[in-house]
Amino acid sequence: MENNSPAHRAALSTEDYHKLTGFDGDWRDTWWDDEFLSMMARQWGLNRVETVLDVGCGVGHWGQRLLRHMNRTTTLHGVDPEKAWVEGARKRAQKLGQEERSDFQIGTAENLPWPDNSLDMVTCQTLLIHVADIHRTIQEMTRVLKPGGLFLAAEPNNFGSTAAGFISNPMPPWEKIFDLLELEYRCTQGKAAVGEGHQSGGQLVMDGLRSCGWNDVKVKLNNQSARVTPPYTDLASKTMVEFLRTSHESGAAMVVGSTRENCLRYYLAGGGEKSRFPMLWDQARKRLTEMISAIDEGTYASAGGHIHYLTWGYKPAF
Image 1 (cartoon, rainbow, N blue to C red):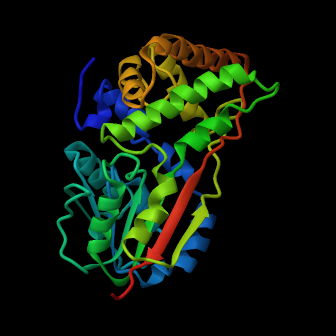
Image 2: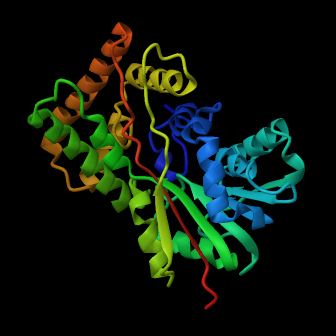
């Protein structure tokens, strides 16, 4: 299996990582409801935004979705360290008829190529769960904002979402859930410990903004759930089922790190006992096998348990 950089891709091929992150296709667009975003656009005052920067833009899903709710004169800038994703964002912009309003370039969230106080809005989606230092990244994002400019982060609490997904009928025994939660939590700790991001970073964005001296910070939950329901023909369900099958066939598990090699690395870095890992990994693989069997029977259904925060504020005029 091909190894890739940056580090959070460890033990994953480029193809598998693209599937994992949802950059292939339009699955990420199912995360958001336009009626909800239209309501939030009024609350955020997106009609006043002329320049917006999507940090860690990937192939552009988030910024391009927000652009629907902005003025026709608004310019979308995007930055990502991956050349292939920047090229993908340009192609999607052309497909969506946004190419004349868009500019995508290679760069990092920790060193943005914009001057101080230069942009009306800075935003990100599932970026902060991958950075080594959330506070430092937020400070850099707020640096390029004009006073009064809007900071908006769409970031998940993946540990909470995973825990919610363990609820089923009948309720599984505590011993089984205890093992699965231990593996998930240790891997979450380990990923942060090795500097590859906090998997539940959405929980920490408010604290990051407050550390910049922002007192008026607001948080709202996304109104969408990541539901998966039979007959699995809607885009969200179909894509998730395909990902579950691919993960199962490749020998991975639905745990932070995905592959056995990567999970072990995170688990040990998170303080886990090496002697317990084989049993915990077997439990995670068994759970995925059971999910696939239920899908084959047409009985697997999940409300999603999706915890996705929108955290925002306006840059004070210090």
